[in-house]
Length: 301
Ligand code: SAM
Image (tube, rainbow, N blue to C red; front, side, top):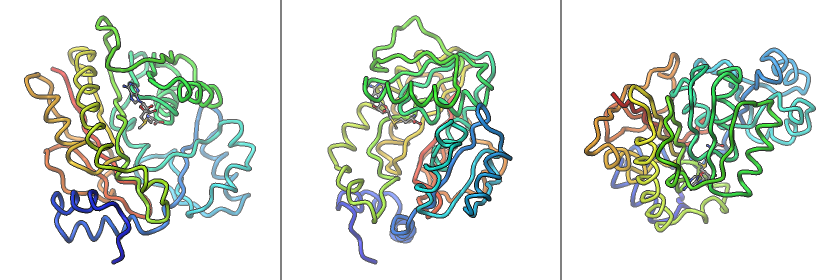
């Protein structure tokens, strides 16, 4: 199979997964990826979205693990972007894998929730929708321009009760305490690379992996310190490399009483998975439907 991915990437996955799994990963990255969207109940019903897709003659599939998820053929973006319901925030373009971390966190109404690396806000808005705007969400983003985009997306999707803070998550004040935390960490994006997207491939580098891993450990340690006793944290990346995933979790949990919890979600057994190096974590294998993604659910006793 022709391989146009950076040598550092293929060497890393060869070491981590072995030849057979690597062939599956590379095959998943060669295919055009399906389009997917998340219906936003704050602006439209699931029936409204289904009717819109039928009207636009877009074939779709529903997923067993999430009512709001719709899977469409690759290349459906242009038609979707021209729909009035897109402009009014009735749905949001989000990869299937990116819908998983909020589902695994299971945000609760009335809870104080931190979204520690939030822009452009797909998961912030999803958590607000899952709680019908009844959680108190703090959305932190270090990049001011991306924070503007986050505010715009939240407003468009009818999200209220979110406090956007332009801040380095590592420098959040120590007096904050949260019931639930999502750390959807900045990463190398190794799980999202596609053979058809040279820009994405060029953005990946060994240095980016190294820098991301160092930042991820710092962010996760800080997140754990801000989590209330009895609280839950979800750490996720769109990378499939151990150094940004299992190794980060292992390192941040060292010397703390926090523990990994099994990830349970009805229908989740349908996901394509990669072997993991840390029990109870989940790594989604890149396929034509899914981006590569890593998720860990952590509880502070
Ligand atoms: N959760 C987002 C979503 O679902 O739309 C995607 C988050 S993206 C993977 C990571 C984000 O973290 C980027 O917007 C990046 O600018 C931001 N970031 C990077 N370093 C950060 C830091 N030290 N503190 C807070 N945010 C940071």
